[in-house]
Structures are given as structure tokens and as C-alpha cells.
Length: 339
Figure 1 (tube, rainbow, N blue to C red):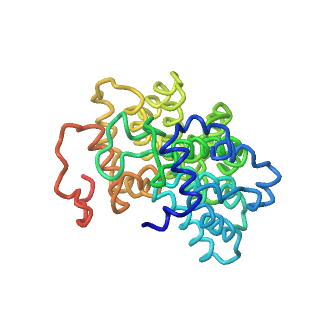
Figure 2: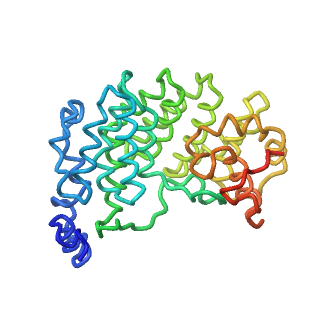
Figure 3: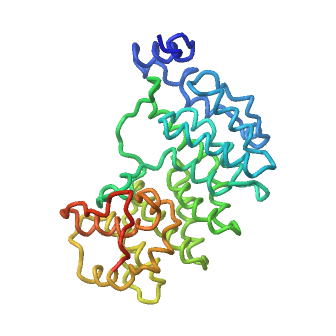
């Protein structure tokens, strides 16, 4: 008999979600969405993690221990704490990862904190769906969720964890948008990545992204802001965004990384045939230098094996969806340079 078969938490999950109807638990004690919504702003700001009923959820106590360590003054301790939460997410434990979101956001918002960009990106990563390493189709690259119901290995209805994380980011949208002005460019890019997954305050987030883009001097962050604006338009219909993206990639005065990101965004916002003008822009701007500039962006890393071929993978999937996977897609091999 496996150890978890005698664990009361796992037994309760099995009874409620495997043997029973999950919808009968909606709004009740096992509903992580209700739990996250019940955490007061004061408790979150005070880092009152003991106010959270971690023990209702599989792997809850372990995740709580990681959250406790997030406020350590030791950067290595914080790194391993964030990595611990990331490990739960990697094991499809969306529910307990969602419980950590309010605290991850406050780690990111603390200018004296450690691993701020990592914490912010992890909060978004609970929600951000990607096609994984390899091909990126036009209907896949900038999707927030795949729309499919998910279950955790314990049997818990994991979709509620994803929804809870989106709600948690929406509840603290002011923290996320403030980080768009952070002195650290990695934090600014992570804030853009996080803002688009919020379940609410969409107009505020969209406005903050555009405002930051108008003054952003870092080309990598600018490219990320463009991708975020396009992704937000994909998730929350914005008819004007397609024309906005086209104007950006058509403008020779824009930095190459911005033009490339705008082209990627445009391709994901429409199913129109790819115009020759856009192909010409990508031929001219999607250089090795542009690929290196865009490598740190979470959108690029999410579709890459080794961190330096994300742009090429995106372009192949978006422009040549019918082409077979090239041999260099083997993760143990080094990809060629961009042509």
C-alpha cells in the first residue's frame, strides 16, 4: 500500500474529486479559489502564511515551509524556496502553488528581496500555458491557457488552482503594474509576463503596459512588453491591437527586437496569410543579435530547450507550420546560428 493511501488529505481529495462531483465542492473548504480569495490584504502584506489552511491540500505543508523561507536574508535560501514551489508546479500541484502566489508577488515587490524576477515569473507560470519546447503554431504561442480541464496527480481538480492563481494576480494587480517601473529590467519583463494572466483589472493592466512601453529604453524589455500587449489582446479581445502590432512591425524607426515581437504578436492575432512585407521585416530584423536580446524573455525560454534558439523555433512554427522538425531539435545538440 502506498503511503498516500493512508494520508487523510489524499483520502479527502479522492472522496471529493475522484469518487464525487468536484462542482459539489465549489466555494467550500476544498476550493482553493475560495481559500485564496479569503486571504486578506493585511495578511498578505504581513506575510501571515499561518493564516492559510495549507493542510487542506496535498503537498500543502511542504509548500508552506518553502513560503516561510521566501523572506530569508540569504539569497541561496530564497532561491531554493522559490525552486521548491516551482517543483510543486512541475509536478502539476497547481493548487498549492496558487496558495503561494500572494507571497511570491510580495517577494518580487520588495526591493530588498532576493530572486524577485524568478518569484514573479513563477507566479505567472502557474497560469501561462505554452506549447513546450519545439514548434509554436500561431494559435499556440501567446495563449494563456489551453482551455482544457486539469487534474493533479492526487486527483484534485487542478483547474481551480490555475483559476485561483489568476484571481490572486488580479487582486494584486497594483503590485504587478508598479513593478513595470522597477529599476531591474528582469523584474520589468517578468511583470509584463505576469500581468497578462490576471483574471481582472484588464484595462488597468493594458494601460500600464502601453505606458511603460512608451518610455522603456531596454530593447529586451520593450520586446517583452509588445508580446505581453499582444497576448493580453489574444486573451481579452482587443480589435485595435492587430493594427497596432502591424504599425509597429512596419515602422523602420522601431528597434529590431520590437519589430520582431510585434510581428510575432500580429501572427498570433490573425489567421490572415503572411504578407511579403512581414517576411521581409523578419528577414532583416530576426538576426543573431535580436535572438540574443530576446533570449531572456520568458516567452522565448518557455519554447526552447537550451535558451538560445527560442526565436528560431517561433519563426519556424509560425511561418512554416508544414515543415518537419529539423534534426537539430534534439535537445542534446546545439542549434545552428540564425541565418
